[in-house]
Image 1 (cartoon, rainbow, N blue to C red):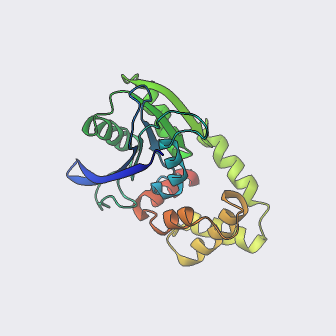
Image 2 (image 1 turned 90 degrees about the horizontal axis):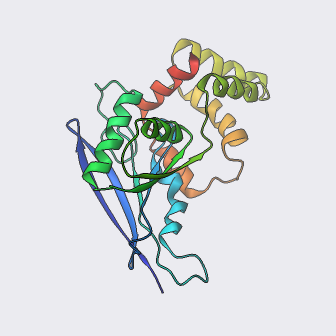
Length: 223
């Protein structure tokens, strides 16, 4: 029976440490290229994508080995460093992705991006990198403007007092306030994940959300 093992570590990027995790089958088929996973947010770490580790195992009833599955926490969240001085931008995260591929010797990959991670995956793809065999996008917006419009349309279905709290703190730039976070919990349980209670991997991810990265996200959405 094929089993898996995991290796964790850090890579250096712009003087900071970026955490990664590689899940690999005990018997790896050289014909099955690794899957590199990009989490969303920005600033919601990899934990909620952990079910994808199952791809390292062979499909039921198929006599074949699995493939490596690689995760990393983008700078500013999760197990990676949280520097207070960098300018969080698409350019920073694109450079970080290139650094991860280079350091881990990921010459040929399948690339998976969820939500914001899909936006990052698209940016990587349009740079025409070598060795990008396929691109998988999950819940990825093709237009930020459309995404913001639709997100606020969903919010309009929440109780009026919840809407008022969200709008007030986003207008004031106080999205780290506990009142705002409680209101966003209502939004998230209504539209992000309706499973109650949340899966442990999702709860764990949100317990390690990056402050700086999420502030950057809130500013983007407010525009």
